[in-house]
Image (cartoon, rainbow over all chains, first blue to last red; front, side, top):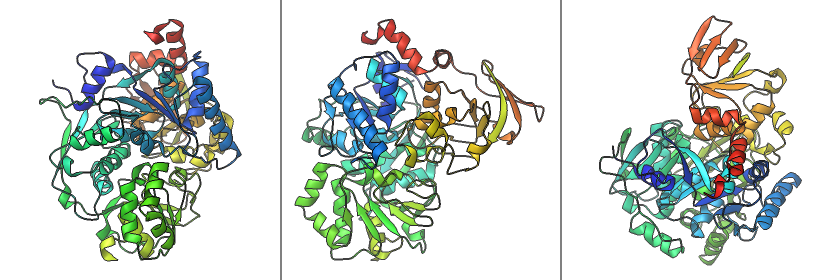
Amino acid sequence: MGMTMTQQILAKKAGLPQVAAGQLILAEADMVLGNDITAPVAIEAFYEMGADRVFDKEKIALVPDHFCPNKDIKSAQQAKRMREFAHAQGIVHYFEVGEMGIEHALLPEKGLVTAGDLVVGADSHTCTYGALGAFSTGVGSTDMAGAMAMGKVWLKVPSAIQVRLTGKLNPWVSGKDVILHLIGILGVDGALYQSLEFTGDGVSSLSMDDRLSMANMAIEAGAKNGIFPVDDRTLAYLSEHHAKPPISYAPDPDADYTRTIHLDLSAIRPTVAFPHLPENTRTVDEAGEVPIDQVVIGSCTNGRISDLRVAAAVLAGRHVAVRTIILPATQAIYLQAMEEGLLRQFIEAGAVVSTPTCGPCLGGYMGILADGERCVATTNRNFVGRMGHPGSEVYLASPAVAAASAVAGRIASPEAL
Amino acid sequence: MNAKGTVLRYGDNVDTDVIIPARYLNTSDRAELAKHCMEDIDPTFVTRVKPGDILVGGRNFGCGSSREHAPIAIAASGIACVVAESFARIFYRNAINIGLPILECADIGKAETGDTLAIDFDTGKIQNLTRGETYAAAPFPPFMKELMAQGGLTGYVRSMLQKGGERA
């Protein structure tokens, strides 16, 4: 039986000629990632394991992005713990406030992940790097500790669902709408323990930002990873970001998929996930009258430059009707947005622009919701209490829909403004 | 390895945000996390849970974030074992890695809050002593058993490091 793209990478990293779904392997990691919430727990476990030095100080990335710049004293203590560990171990890829960004936007931007890599991160959205043709998956803190100590991680080889894309996206429709649409089809556990392997001639029309945003939310269908084929656009992106030389893997012609889903990109409409699960999707046309209190545009899903450009295109010359918080995902994106005049457009439209942070997405800070409040967010989860009070509601959407909703004060399509 | 305890039952898609809301993630103190376990789905959980109780869920238990604080909060609450129809994969790894017993069982929806369960981890046999029913769960694969026997991944890695296998 042939191997999927994911299985090819796992076999290589486990030093095996062949792997099969369900097999437990010990695989070598090319990059191990943690943040200010998960790394402190991993650091404790690391020393409890009797480890004293990390396996490779160039293959660990520590990013204080969740509650940083520090939101309170306890968060400051956690960030300090990670900073001291990074310095004591000589971790090369520690990013202090001022250099840091949201981890899953930052690592590709800094060229720290390339095609064919195996990346584990103590953050569930580590699956983002599948957009670059890497195997990447979220793990817990103890896993991160084991990987920092040994450079290895235990993994169960996943089976895979093939997602075959055809056609091209229409104006105002983005990768975010595609992945929300797909999660609506699969359900939040429809790809449990499996890979989502994107393929088909529709892939080439998707920008890298679209692909990053799609791979990012593979976890919201329960998937272990989401992965894209490596094409000219991937190679150009990796080259531009000075990533290590890529290794392209492709599935065997007789690779076994548990299921194939066909998506015609030209048929996908702007899509919104209603509370309290990402699978509760409706097209913006079916959303009905939903008045809102806040909009958040940012996060590891949608805080990249193309996201900000789309938001600015909607907001330019208009004024927001509700509190609107915009978070460029990295310092480089922030600077780019400034140079392109996007920040001025946001501020003149009545939005606030924040330094990079995960803050509001997980209900940390920088935009917490009160009881009964509703937010349209370009983030990735809308669980009960995700962004604040358990009585609040989060509606997941693209930057275009979020910006249009900010102007309308209710869920709206940019086409309808 | 065996467990016997009283069921506290919840539904499908119990996510890590309701198991331990992010507003409490500015600490990793076990006792502090336990104080807020399940707070956003059931504020009475912390007053009802007793040491040795068994947490039961439906499909996709533990979906969402990779926060290990979620199984830590559950274990620190005194829960002896989590049984669900299925688990989100990162939660599953985290529970195994920290030595919290966890079993997948298709029929566990038949158990109700207050029932007494007796669980044999070696065979995966779950007896509902209240209802006189028996449910079959998949027993741990050998690798997981080895991890659990060493108290989780921490003990496992410690022994690998001691053997000098880490630089192999």
